[in-house]
Figure (cartoon, each protein chain N blue to C red):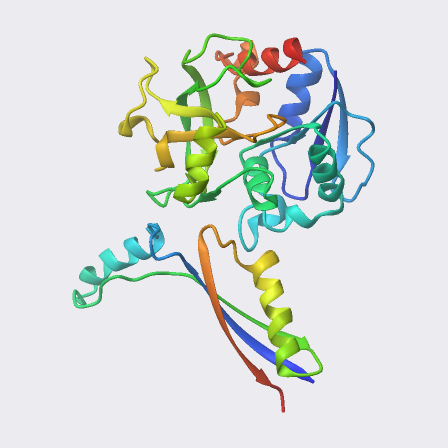
Length: 84
Length: 228
């Protein structure tokens, strides 16, 4: 089976996100002061071949832990869906 | 001494490093291509600055898995001397050979300027050879140099005397103003418990030639070569 993973990688909540902060501040400049606390991360989509969803989950998790996210500074979450 | 300088696609301080070691310090230098797996019996390996693999994903994240790095990690685990400068430091943090991580500068800018750093320990090959806390003027050039580590890791780093360099003012005082990028505790460089792996964001190889009117970086290279 081929599964499609949609992965979100975000800077840890406790850490300053200078990109998000700069974008937050520019919300005022476009007339949207109601928008605050912007945080910017990454979105990664990928396909994984696995016998079942559980195995696919394990593989994506391994990819996140080893390469896609650095857990000293980032957290990750993902969804998995079987391709039709 | 025989130095090995690793060249990744995107390294751009490799030749400065080779020039300083070969021409200024008259040492033997071997270039180590990222696809190689032979370290040529080097005594000291340097991971130079630059943008290995275009800094894709995160600085140093992809370089970490290049063929040469497998050998470099084995070399360091056996006690071999290994130093990473700038992008090299980022790679060493990604491999886990050094604690912590290097985040985007707190002002979200690429900073290229001279800063002052001082050594925080004389118990290392890089800092043995000159007086503790002597401020050195060394350039930095990075967008991701904000040193960060979780509390427990910082505590261990302190307990292990692992802070090598801190950003300071020209009198050697550690102040928030002297911290160019928001690094935790003004940390500019660290070493591991075994004291054979070193990482620093500033570029001593850019301050080691009379022609550049700043040779403070020579203190660090002399220290390595004299105390080896």
